[in-house]
Amino acid sequence: MVATLALFLPWTVLSAQDQIVEEALRELPASDVARDAWTTGFLAWCGPLLLLLAGLVVAAFGQFRKVRIAGLPHLWLIFAAVSVVLMVLGWFAIGWQFDEETRGLLADGGVGLYAGIGRYLGILAGVASLVAAVLDVRTLRRR
Image (cartoon, rainbow, N blue to C red; front, side, top):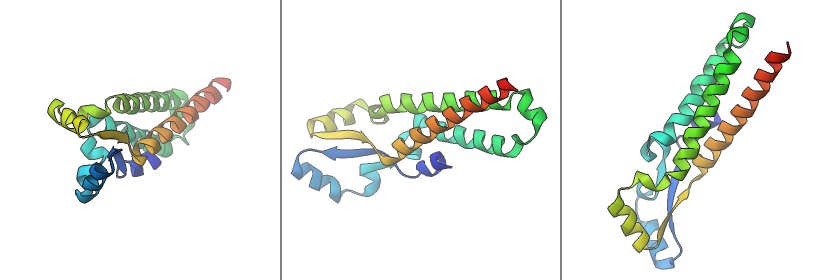
């Protein structure tokens, strides 16, 4: 749920150390300075959507013993791990949402690309889901 809400929060934020450039950024429309996951790219929105899908499947079918024994916790673990990997890759590729010319222009102007609150919440939700999935798989093995 948290990862899904994080999709609509800023994932990438432009900021500058120079006061004049920072004031110029404040005058721009908010959508030009802060991008949500939908406008950031595939590596931003795919991970939280996988977590949402896994959460819905676990909530709907997790109460049935046969489904749990058939491998639902393992499926949850795989979905959580893939979503965390996608979000981490998205973090490393934060600059690739802009073309080379735009990245050069931003760098020349002293504007930096930073992770927004949505990116932090998304990765936190992904790690929490991954830990819960690992614990669920371990609990299933003990039975």
